[in-house]
Image 1 (cartoon, one colour):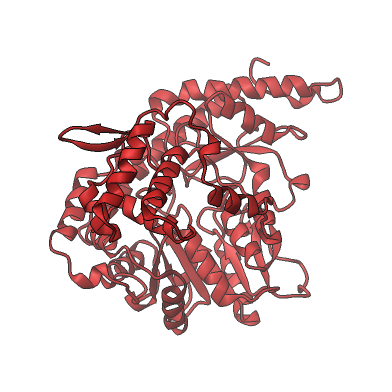
Image 2 (cartoon, rainbow, N blue to C red):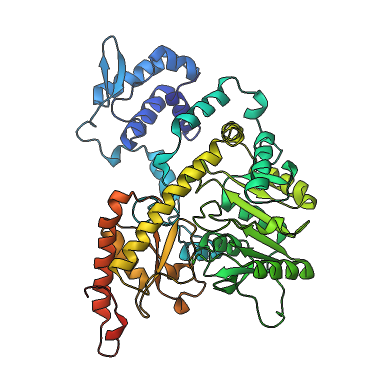
Amino acid sequence: MRSLVADLVALRLVQLPQGPMNSALYRILREAIYEGRLAGGTRLPASRDLSAELAVARNTVVHAYTQLQAEGYVVVRPGNGTFVADMLPEGATHAAMPAWLRAARGASVARAPTVSRRGQHLLRNASAARHQGGAFTPGAPDVTLLPRERLTRLFRDAWRNPDPALLNYAHHGGLPALKSALSDYLSVSRSLDCTPGQVIVTEGAHQAIELITRLLADVGDTVWVEDPGYWGARSILQINGVQIQGMPVDGEGMCLPQTMPEVVPKFIFLTPSHQYPLGPVMSMARRLQILSLARQWGAWVIEDDYDSEMRFAGRPIAAMQGLEPDAPVVYLGTFSKTLYPGLRLGYLVVPTALADAFQRAQNELYREGHYMTQTAIASFIEQGDYARHIRRMRLLYGQRRAMLVNLIERRLGQGWLHGNGSDAGLHLVIDLPEGMDDLAVEHDLQVRGVVTRALSRYYLDRATARPGLLLGYACVPESQMAASFEVVVAVLAEHVQAMRRPAARASSHLVGV
């Protein structure tokens, strides 16, 4: 196998004009050392090896090495070999760069990097958080409580003697064993009406939404989304050229228009089990109305079953996909909240008539894989470990939610907890006084080590957004929650004081302010 040094030399040789090989090799190595491509302490190949790799006389390599040693670029350690010097020799400057390289670099035109218009729009509205853990990161599960020993054993078993087919390109829409396990699990836990052939395994929810958008909507088509709603879905829809129409949310979920819309949507994107970010559970009446409209218009309902597993009170509510036979629903789920986000594993349940199209499109666009991971997760589900883990975490998160609710009511007073929330999910929303800058509150909290999300980020038009904060409780140990919440209280008090004017003094109802 050829060394990396030989590869570097071979690439540079084709850029050099014809000339003596020994001087060319010396100049290439010297320049690579000066540029830092060959760092101090790097061991150079033995002269015999490098000459064989480059198909040149050994004396050519010896000459280059000797010259580099004489100038202090390399050192020879008897019995060990030739190494790049830790420090450049005194007097080694940019002037030592060969004329051919200076000319090539001088010919390049300096220009600012450019991003497409849609790329600029994406970056302007980017909302993905840099910090994903600790108090009070919304939507972050407690990954410290994974059954690591069990998962490690399943991953080890999967790799012990893998079928070569699992290590190659695939075209099944996911590992058949995982599709079967998911079909069985969802049929029981979420009342889905599905077969393994309808399941498409994806690399997380974002890839699933991208696949849906490319297959079910054309550029310029109208799509209804919740407003406020999930920023990730919105970004994917917009960069694919879809026209987004925000629909307000009340205590029953997405509100429907009072009159027939001029343009009917191609699909309707919903989080009915636990609306993100406000939290209401969509009523049965509203679900049936939306399904009826979708059938009339030939539209699709995209059911993002966000946080459906984390329901702490009341009876579970069946997914929209299973409410009617052959419902016009594409169901979306993920393991990010129930296991861990870095797993990057999600899934779709699509109508039978679309299953082949989704499977082929996924293979064409994304070249599915990670079958060894899917093998382990399939076993985790089949053997009951997944359901046990969810039950354990549901109990824990319910306790943490109750603690945060108590802190909000005791330290802030009545009226701060958002009224449309439900006993589900991984976060709570608190309403802020009208006129308060929730982005500034979010920033000031982050400076003090507390991560929250401003509610205004989730609205299509931030100018008309209601101020609020999302507080995640799932990844906050009970022992740390009270102290972290005191930081929230202190920052809110500062912002209330800054807002106070005689006409607005009554808007503050912070305890002790």
